Amino acid sequence: GQNIDQPTEMTATEGAIVQINCTYQTSGFNGLFWYQQHAGEAPTFLSYNVLDGLEEKGRFSSFLSRSKGYSYLLLKELQMKDSASYLCAVRDLTSGTYKYIFGTGTRLKVLA
Amino acid sequence: DAGVTQSPTHLIKTRGQQVTLRCSPKSGHDTVSWYQQALGQGPQFIFQYYEEEERQRGNFPDRFSGHQFPNYSSELNVNALLLGDSALYLCASSLRGRGYEQYFGPGTRLTVT
Image (tube, rainbow over all chains, first blue to last red; front, side, top):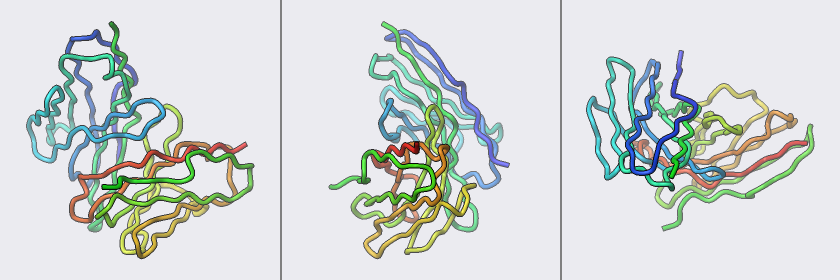
């Protein structure tokens, strides 16, 4: 089957570093994505990993281990505006067509 | 460069009614996917359209149907509305072959009473 697990909520302090973990199970893995979603808004793309390793993009980094079915999103130098839900999503490639499977999201609260 | 647009922004319907939601993809994109996002949950994949055909479908009943037009815009239709259909409906567009670049529209908030 297909399943994605991530923590429901996390709290961190402004200026700190936070790591949001995601584990997944899917038969046709074809990439892992992280999206940020502020309350009442659409998800916005943060990062994409298809090969093992770390992808860095400014204050955000994402790591993937395909053999372990594991990814994390690392947010550095936290700012108040980083308070949002962070969605882990796996792209499944079946019969030549992409399908995205999302986790329930991790609500991150950044405290002053 | 126009992004993904959706209409209407909000909608209130009564149980048993039918609803049509609309989506225009980002300029240059040819593939449209629809998602349902309940409060506090992640988006759930409904279906995807490419070349005016449904290419993939998630675990949603036949009450959910769609259409894609020659200009790549798309509609989501839901028949016999249930209270549980209340959610944010998101449209996402991409270019076939570059599916990692998926852009979401602002969504349509549907409330069924």
